[in-house]
Image (spheres, one colour):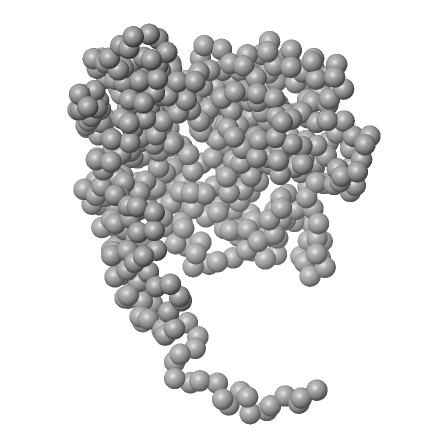
Length: 500
C-alpha cells in the first residue's frame, strides 16, 4: 500500500477557489435576494399568472453540461430574471385560483430562509434538539387550535399522499399479519386486504395501495350522494360483500374537503360504522381540516375526532409554504412499530429516550419544516388565520353568486368551503348527448382560454362524467376585485368561444 504523502496538505490551493463563497459577496447577494423577493411579491399582480412556454423552452436557454468554471453569485440573479421568472406559473398571484390556491406568505418565506441557512436534519433529537422540539410544539399548537382530542399525536411529512401511505402501513401492522417482519410475498394464508374511499377521494389512495403491495384493484370506490359525499349505505354494503367473499377490510379513507368540489363525507357516521366493524378510519382533511379553527364550523372538529388517523396540510389553507403535512393518529405506537429501524451509527442518538421522528416514517433525513410553520403561526396568530379563512369563504360565496348570475353559466356542484365548480353552457345540440359533448369541449376550452390570457388561472375537473371549471380561493393577496375581474374574463372568453 502506498504511504500517505506528507506533502499533500501543502499542495492545497490557497487562491480562494476552495471553501464557500466569501462572506462579503454572500452578504451582498443576500441583501440583493431580499430586495428581489420583496420586489417580486410587490409587483406580482402585474405579471402574467401563467407563461406562454412550450416544452423544452427553458432547457434550451441553459447549457447542456455543468459549467466548467466558477461564476459569481451575481450571475444567478441574471439567469433568474432571464431564464426562470418568465417561465414560471406565478402561484402567488392574487388571480391564481387553481388547485387549492397558494400559501405563499412573508413569514413563511422567512422561515424557509432560516431553515435553509441552518440546514439541520431533524431525524433524531440529538441531531437537532430545536428542530425536534419545535416540531412537537407546532403540532401541539395545531392540535389545540383544531380542537382535536388529546389522544392524537402528530408527525410532519411532506404531503398528504405520504401521510396516507404511513397511516395505511400502520393500519396493516395493527391487523397482526406480521407484514413488517415476514412481508407479503409467498404467503398464501393472507387474505385480500381492501381499502374503501369515495369516488371523489384523492388518487393517493390507489398510489398508497400500489406502494404497499395491496394492489390498485383492491381499492373500492364507494358511490356518493347529490352533494358528492360518500354514501354510508353503499359503504356498508361494500364491507359486507367483501367479508362474505373472504376479503379483509383494512381501512376506510373518508374526506373532509375533496379535491374536485371540497365536499365532506359524513365522517362521524362513517366512524361509527368503522368502530362497529373494527376497521381503521383515516380522514383526509388535507384541505378542509383548516375549517376546524372556526367556531362556526365546530362540526369539522367533531368529525375529525372520530378518526384513527387524519391529515391536515397547512400548505393548503393555513398559509404555510409548500411542503408541510401533519399526520395525527391515536396509535403512534403502531406507526413507530411499523417504521422504527435504528442503524448502528445512530444507535447512541436513539437510545436516550427522546422523541426521534425518524422512527415514524421511511425518511431518515428530514427537513426543518416546523420552522416555517412556527414563523407563520407566530406572525399571524390564531385570530389572523381565522380572519383570512373567513375572507376566503366570503370571496368564494361572492364568486358563486356572480357566476350563477351570468347568462349562459351554471353551478356544477353545491359550493363547499372556498371551492366553486361551474360550467359554461353551450348552444343546445340536436340531442342531449350532443349537448353534453359540446359542453365538455366548451369548458375544457374555456379553462385553457382563461389561462392563456395570463390574467387568471383555473383548473377543471370531471363530475358525474361531465367536465366542469373550478375556482379555489386560498391566497392572502386575493381581493374582491380579482374575483370580479375573473367573472368579466369568463363572460368575455365564453362569448368568444361560443362564436367560434
